[in-house]
Image 1: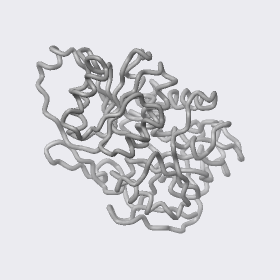
Image 2: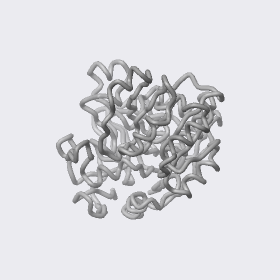
Image 3: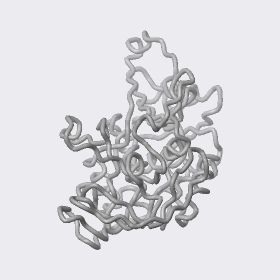
Image 4: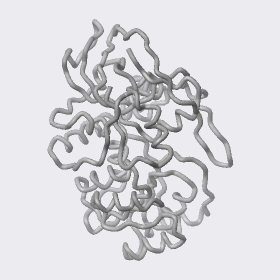
Length: 350
């Protein structure tokens, strides 16, 4: 088996050849056909998450060890089964539901494995899809994506279900409602496409990069705003006739958070998704005065992922721009993503 692993944080991924794992118990072995390169991979690659007041959280304190294989947007073909594996057969083509929990805690029993405190997430806590094979703990995490190209389907495992969940926190939505998307990278473009199937609100997309703003217009945004402008929030308020119903911060930086909060109307909601890092100071009286809601959203659960795939299979979600690269391009793909040289998404195809 060939994989690209983090062997030293911040250093180029290293190609590793090792025996292909053999599934035992309930395990399922998948031959990887496509794996998306996600922005959150950058944080794992560097080994830290930036918190408020300059504090950095080392990922090794959160159960992540190196060498480690990234890649949590995975589709592939089932090639081997443990003796107790259920739900799939050899030859099945499946999307991996990445956000596998312990299966026993209260949130897992409620169907929200993505919020489990003892996760077994593929590409996060377990070896992921920057490889030609990936070993899964069971077959319940596999979803039939028939009718959707593999290179596109893999993107719904994280970027797709992430914005699907975030948009859900703003429901109900209609064309009369305005939604601000802060960030027009892969997540932003995905949100524009998925929003059409979830009430078709009027989308205002904001980014500091002109090329990404243009991509947002091409994807279907009604308006775009330069997020780096001092008048950005005022422009959004004018475009929306008094402020947006909801804003989704896909960046997660101090400036993007302040911008999103400043652009919502009274009674509006800001959903924080991005993981760039940092912190903000906010006056507590603003919460009752503006009756605003600030909330977070972390990927999505299995039910939401299945619902999203069904929408894609029904043709209700247009594809976002993506480019395919061979597995050996994984180190460069991470570097290109970090440097802002990627429009849409990069998908690795072993």
